Image 1 (tube, chains in turn red, purple):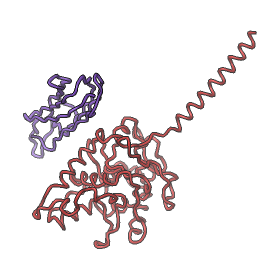
Image 2 (cartoon, rainbow over the protein chains, first blue to last red; image 1 turned 120 degrees about the vertical axis):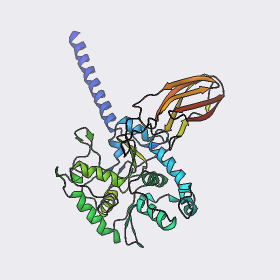
Image 3 (cartoon, chains in turn orange, red; image 1 turned 90 degrees about the vertical axis):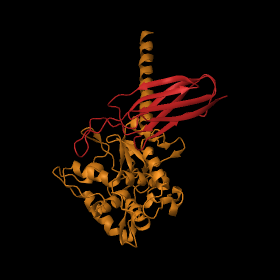
Image 4 (cartoon, chains in turn purple, brown; image 1 turned 30 degrees about the horizontal axis):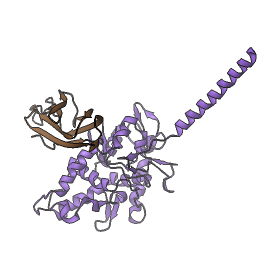
Length: 287
Length: 109
């Protein structure tokens, strides 16, 4: 009697531990989903293009953040980056400069910018060089509105980039790397894998070989730029792509390139291509 | 008035009588601490939101005093019980004497 009771107890314990094991693995598989405003689902995992060797999966930086930071991006009201999008909306409609024109005078409603962000940066035939979203904005200001260009990483510029990027939110990134863009892409790729600085780190050292790991207190992501501009808790403002690159290069203890300069243009194209297929999240929230 | 200030409030449009609803408020504000100096070394005077209040049909729901070390763009989330249809009035007071307000109506079915 006693023995059979004990036997049953052992059996029960075994069943319980199996059940618990199942529960744990089911939990591990449950990936959080980025659904904005409860209606728009973002692609946070994508198969990278065939020409990207080092990644088996492209993963949005959102996935690497803590639950609390992730939650801020789920709702436009909670997303502090939307403050700047609102401010840029006012700028979009504001008549400025000697010509007294606004962005809206030519482009109409900002929704006409849908899809623009997904193909940036791209080769501009007329200028004969690779242009980023910021270059297009400054071209509009100087050629059509008779104004001085905005600073490449200025508040207005980053906010405007966020507003225009926001129109494409949810659409997959799709930059072209062939044709006239090819040499820029090759240069960007070389930069990505070249170790620089006192610490002798390349972009790949952290964002390809070690994403998901911690570097001191920082949880490394893949360094994808599909969510740019990003609102960062660290400085409580929107951060553009080149400003972020600059921070990264500084972290390797190297002299950085100039935001808006040719080096970061090439790097932006290469890094953007690594995230082809991920949704535009502008403005994303990161720490 | 400080530059770039814009209050934003999120209140459900409908509720049932006696329901506890969640209210979210956010005001874009620089919250100048008074500790910083400008390029010439002069202290930039403090300019922060020092008080935030929310009233419902003339009755106070919440009243908050803010001091130094509160971050830019202060965000408040709180709950309120709504007994009847009415209007929420949100008020933010700035050190420089400005007042920013926003109003949101709610219908109780």
